[in-house]
Image 1: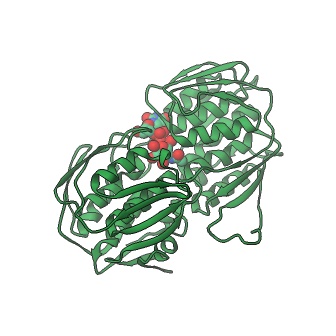
Image 2: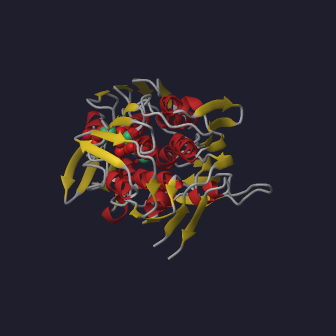
Image 3: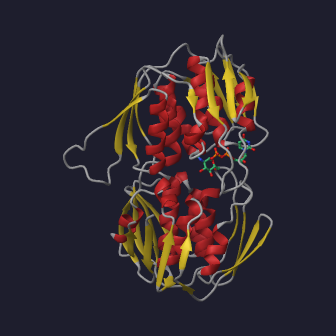
Length: 429
Ligand code: UD1
């Protein structure tokens, strides 16, 4: 299993290109199931989760071609996928695949909408809490699907097609909102989704679906209206930049010190996180090429942050912010309200010398003068990158084990940081 070795203490200077967003790419690829025509996606990141979803879609009969590099293109350019679900040969998504990536459960919606049936494994437990799918199932039922749970699978049928309905989510859910939108595009009549998730990736997917012929309005707000259409066609769409990757590297610079241009990043996608970074003492400037983040000397100030759905501070940056606050001058508090149990990074940060106290959903972080490198273990995607951030400021060598978690969501992380001066390398095997 690969590991990453980091020697802390280097400043970061230069440019980091921001990749396409993982959390938009996955539902966009899944949306290809809604049409028998080709969907072309540009700016697709090279990630383990994307490769896994290619396999899952392949199992349904979806054909995916990756365009070759054009002249002048480098690894910094995203890939282009040509996805054709002209022939769906199987409407079952098996446990072996769905259990490895929760978002693959979302195939349920387009399969039922287009094929009238699907059998999708329930995703099972997950390192960051229970993460149920009850609200996704509720949305499908509201649209007229009959769903039963049979031997670990959600078995859904809508032999006469889905019909529009009002869906009121009791809790904001990204997956629930994607599910409701995708299913409603091919339902008969109008669907109104209340208390919808407002994450930018929802609006990006809705944009693409509208290019495919869907009639969605209000995506990006709490109330989304979908007028069902008889069929969707092909389209070409470029994935929006990854706001979580952006925020992660912004925190890395704030931690290590230096001056970095986050190329292609868009400030409006993560304003809450940028505000927190400025409070902490980083300099953040929007430029026409992206976002510039700098910190030159000076102590980090402690912050008080509560995670919540967009536009608030994202749960997917909570672990990274906590790593940063381990070096603040004073005591910070971070409250995690989106996922229970999303604090697995705490014990690993403590191994590097952090002082963190947990009480329910609230973490108290007492800033320390210095961190010291140690072997640590990645437990999930965001937790593992928080260890990288801490290691950038730790004295001596840190080895991050179980790097496959990182590869799920961060493209060529060691390369991007290494080119900006970090002492970081991948140890293979
Ligand atoms: C998505 C993101 C993930 C991010 C999360 C919250 C993708 C691929 N993943 O995950 O990176 O951390 O949003 O921003 O986009 N819930 C229920 N019942 C359900 C569904 C969700 O109770 O049926 C709860 C969850 O347990 C959680 C909250 O709702 O407490 C939000 O989860 P949700 O927004 O659905 O997360 P995902 O879509 O799985």
